[in-house]
Image (cartoon, rainbow, N blue to C red; front, side):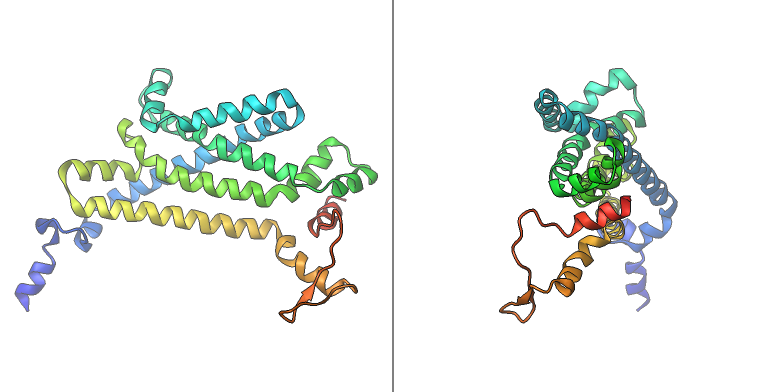
Length: 266
């Protein structure tokens, strides 16, 4: 029994993939790498949102800018990550700014397209109702269009965030890769426990970020969950469907989200 316990506790010397001793003995190292990974991801996505939003508005406002904006962001997304960081090094030097800038550029494709898709999906009757209530362009955008575009926008943020969590690891080539630093070091020395542990934490971060953003999306868009139920409960024309539920009548231009958003904006 003692020999078995000693063997189990010597997983570091045995270079096993799963090793609790590695986690306990290197906990501070893992914590520091995770913190660096998180802040690089968060800063990158926030900056990408700040850049993507005006780009999407410009592409929507001016038809001539639509193609170039989408084309440029798509081209940036096709650049390999190693080549991207190599191109940015002469401008920013070796530092976290290289990684953040690269992640911002990669996130633009998803964010710009999703913001545009969300804004273009806003029903025209919602815009007309808001204008009839005296909404100006700015109030119309922030009080009606953006709330209705939130599901598409948040979907883009979720994709960009999960992608950023994965791509941050490539920043290890300049020493700012968060958990990627541990993964690359472990691969060089074939330190199995380090590679597996850092990789698992990276995956967990991506899953946790996606779940948190999904919860935030549902919190910010309650009408998406309640709109259908409230319409079925109020609509006298709705009849039972084959499944025993309520069937909504077909109406041109109907949208359950529009009345809610306009009402909130007012």
